[in-house]
Length: 141
Image (cartoon, rainbow, N blue to C red; front, side, top):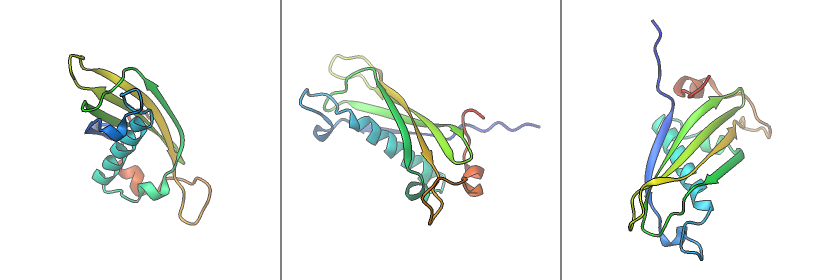
């Protein structure tokens, strides 16, 4: 019998705060990456892997902006583990804007990022520990 596991994913809800906006009154570009990182942290805490962050720096990230977000608007950000390699993990994230002041709900941004595992005491990427691999399920193999 084959057991299918759901891909490792997490969602968080945030409100666009004043500090998250730029001079144009909409979200600053960096806020989407902060929310994706917060969602990633929540994912790894939920999996009992809090040691992920000091060991897994980003080596690549890409954001595609599809709608502006405004001060006071609610946003749901979802991060999904797409693929695990020997030394890296690839993630995708989506930010969904909730209905706000006459603006309909829509995708606000989507993107990808890649992290690598840094073995304690080393400067280069190394293989993911088995206990990480045992708790994570990528969307693709």
